[in-house]
Length: 297
Image (tube, rainbow, N blue to C red; front, top):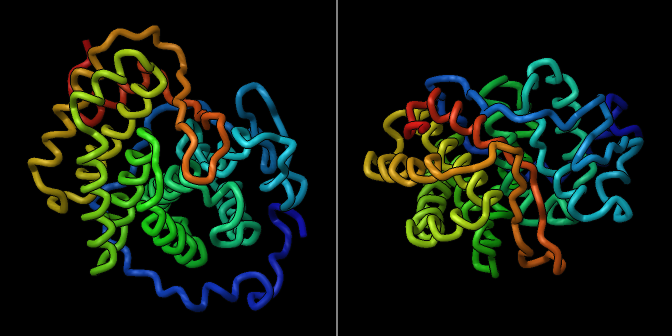
């Protein structure tokens, strides 16, 4: 079976487990998603470029090909290109890539289901659908499975960065879907974020770790935009706190270069950190101005 564009085969062969998934209804958004500027990482329908290394997925084994390295694979599974510059022109690539990921990545198995790429991918798929409205039924069903899997993992050991990403992913899913289960995801996500975004710790680490700072700034700005996409869903005090947290982070000095965030080892990771490329501080300040969040010095 080819990676992209080939026949997916019979449903009972590849997708039978979806029959047990009853996805919640989608909550109608008030607007489309607008992403923070960031360079693309897909350079072809099957080609990806991370950290100076370009590779082509010739078949499904590439999703799990260990010689490519854990960090490169985590970035592959994160789907950051869905929200990168010029993503509209790669929408067909993205549709095929999502469908193929579902086929090639059985629930709970492999790098794609580890916490860092999992939480990041959940948010990226939701952002992409809020922008394009092109996440199909198979993708929505799989998204529900991913969120449920992440929720079940919250009781395990987590690093300082991972809870922020996990809380954000659960909150996004709880806003994206409607119903009782979605409301529970939303409550859990808010609880995790309340703990992970304590002002004292946040500022202390941000002062010494530019990669962490840029990652958290984007997280906070994304949460501010989520409130605009679903107005009235979140408490005003919670949203006001996000504004208050992001202002001093935006005001911190930085060299403006593209940063890396280190999302340290999680419950299944090895000893090395997991790195993701983050937007520049200049891009984040532009994003903040567009949202009316904070003030760029």
